[in-house]
Amino acid sequence: MPVSALQWQPSLGPGGEPPAEGQVLWAIWERASLISHAYLVGRGTRTERGLHREMNGRRLSALARRGVGPSPEAWCRSWALSWLARQLRCAARDKGVPTRLRLPSTTSGCSRYRDPMPASEPKVSAIDLFCGAGGLSLGLQQAGVRVAAGVDLDPACAYPFERNLRAKFIHENVANVTGRQLEAIWRSRKGYRLLAGCAPCQPFSSHRRGADTSSEQNWDLLTHFSRLVDETLPDFVTMENVTRLGKMTVFRSFVDHLRELDYAVDYGNLYGPDFGLPQERRRLVLVASKHGVIRIPVGDTSKNNYKTVQQEIGKLPVLGHGEVDPNDSLHAARRLTPINLDRMRASRPGGTWRDWPEELLAPCHRKSSGASFQAFYGRMVWDSPSPTITTQSYNFGTGRFGHPQQDRSLTLREAAMLQGFPREYEFVPAGERPSMQSVGRLIGNAVPPAFGRAVGNVIREKVRVISKELA
Ligand SMILES: C[S@@+](CC[C@H](N)C(=O)[O-])C[C@H]1O[C@@H](n2cnc3c(N)ncnc32)[C@H](O)[C@@H]1O
Image: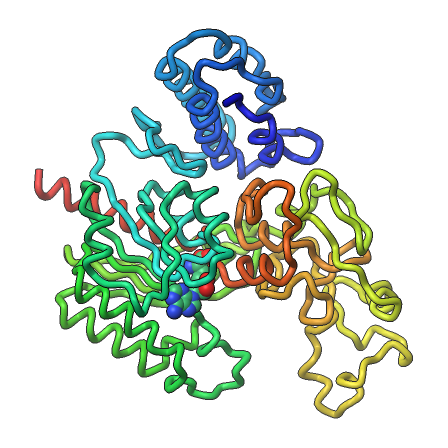
């Protein structure tokens, strides 16, 4: 099978330019995965023109030339990786970024997003319950955790999970999953085991206006998570959910049960911008270890370092409402009704409907309680993180989801990038028209990979410490 040029194009900027400062290291690593994958796929074939594109100020053509012909696959891969190792070191030195990243000796299994993991390091193998489109798994992979499988009830998750993570997707109700099934997946994998999961958060969402929804049916999914910990006793557990869950009885029972099983547990609320996420999302994160004390990740709280909306999506192609980027079906703006277009034009970034002339007000704004609808029909601002991305962030009427400059609401691609998915992350097969509702749900429900990455790093560090102690 020839290497597809398409594998390359989406990972470059709109004009084929190199990634922005600060994204350089990750971008390079993502490309390392892509290169090695491209060579794997393209073994014995001619490398295509897609590999000749400009990358990070250097021509890939040299690489492509070296890859042409009958070179053995292993040679190609190691050549590509050592070339990228040099790139990585140069980028780190040029940017003054300290890096402890090292390249793996092999890329077998070849996820597109895996982070470097020296062969000598102990492996961590994760199963992701309620895996969705793979936000949490992606972050774990970026930290070097190997994702063995994901389980979800929604068949729409199968494509993005398998395509991007290159891990097994199990289409199943977690309530029906048994410890034996999980054991069977882990059995063939060496190293430490991590059971990760983010049970559906609707029952706990703040949109439920403070009601304790503990008795709702979905609630017991967390109990099934607990049951599966009980049945498999993995080395590590991580869980993510909305912050309000922390005050609920169901969560306290979850923690108590972990402690009864001799896990060290830590949990707390993480704030997205502290972890490089260009979004004001707060989430409850729990980590638990069978190997002694473990702590939730600590982010960088200096506001000056917060990534902004502009930094994340500012270079995407300009669109009008109702228009689609011909190169990316996910970058498509919903058509606005004439009155919503007028409202959009009357909105200013960071403002509210109070900026509008009287005739544009909706009935909800005229009520005395209209103040509580402040954030509906709003525009984002360029120079700060975005508001929380929801399952409907393509819909201007449901939040501050107007584009800061263009008269339209966010596209699914923009929402995905503000959630921290790389630009080339695929949610539907090429050529398939994405459903705003279905893909919007996958994106809005995702755990931002930045949180998964931070948790993955904590677990990897813990594993390093354990190995040193054992050595
Ligand atoms: C908050 S989302 C998880 C997001 C995912 N961790 C990510 O990072 O992309 C919750 C997921 O639980 C799934 N779900 C709901 N009920 C389920 C069940 N009984 N068994 C398996 N999955 C379920 C939903 O389809 C949804 O994808």
